[in-house]
Image (tube, rainbow, N blue to C red):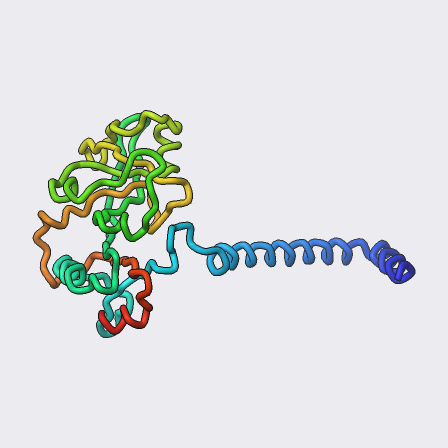
Length: 227
């Protein structure tokens, strides 16, 4: 075996150009394998970092060519009332535009509006403070929960951030919570109330993505039949 290894090194030494290409190719291949494993490990092997994540599901509308359709506000209310036997909680979220101003200038944030039930579905407590309540949502209070990244970026990780205000789209919003670093669903820098109680959109306006938490002992197939 040692003789074979010695011969291989001698062969590579006689053709340094080929040796360099071979080493680089091997390095790139190993790097690609490492990247693929990291993605598979993160997406397929590791469970989501949320309590009881195996019971968290997405519910989508299906109509014609659209198989991943958002739903309308009245439909969400119907589902919340009529599916309690299958779900502990059923909430929704929607992307929204939010520009943070103040400090050194303006920053476009990736923000979402979420229903109070969204927090019960995800079941991840805030790192600091809390999530906003149903009463705050119904009262259309200007409150916001921010990500760990935004907390670090805008406030330097200051522990007294709860109760302070940031200006979003020209309006002051009170920070009520900071989420832990691992919480990034559905992504973004900030989560605001949907304020659905005061909205006037009808059944022809589909903009809400729905998430739900299955009750203990309820199979996915049972929930599908109910829906």
